Image (cartoon, rainbow, N blue to C red; front, side):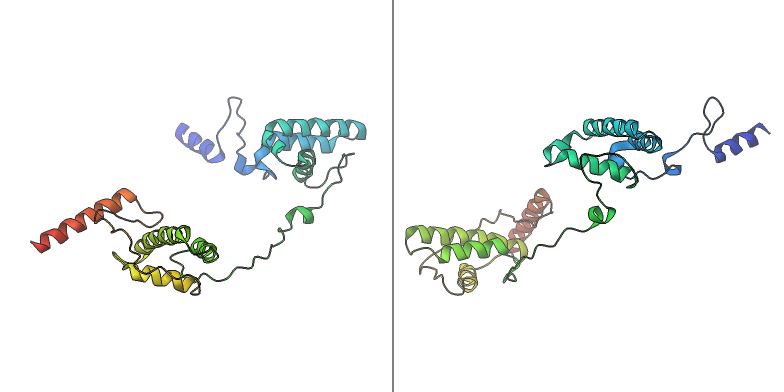
Length: 232
């Protein structure tokens, strides 16, 4: 019989020492701004119940000061005092009659999505290189011919080869990279004749973003070892 009574109490909820059931957050009213906690919600509910307007105004200012302490990072925002009063109105469910230094915002104003900023971008010509590469190519295309431009083209080609190896094959000819540079520049750039890139070490491994570089290197070493064994 005692076990049956214990099971009944557990199904009804945990009891306190005085025999009252505990109230879980899942059973309570949903917080309108959880970052301030339930105590601030209760404070605001209390302020709403004060019949004397002067006393209500006084307590509303006190609650805002408490919110400022709890949300200290709000000082990094412009017009942070107005932000705090806006939060007070949100917590009250936009049902708080006080003399605020700022007008009460409407729910529609705060819930409206931000205006979209139009961005005009050309489609990426080669996704495996990315948009930044195209911007660099445009910059180099506007440079005067000379040693500085040649050095920039060489550095760009080395980086583009690295990106190519990440997303495409195990090897790539220098001529392929040079052709891509000229094509992406709409042939405004002419790679100097006789340019050659340094050889890629067989131990070098390029991993895609998000992959474990250590694991990629180990896989590359195993692959190189298999290739050496096949040559024997």
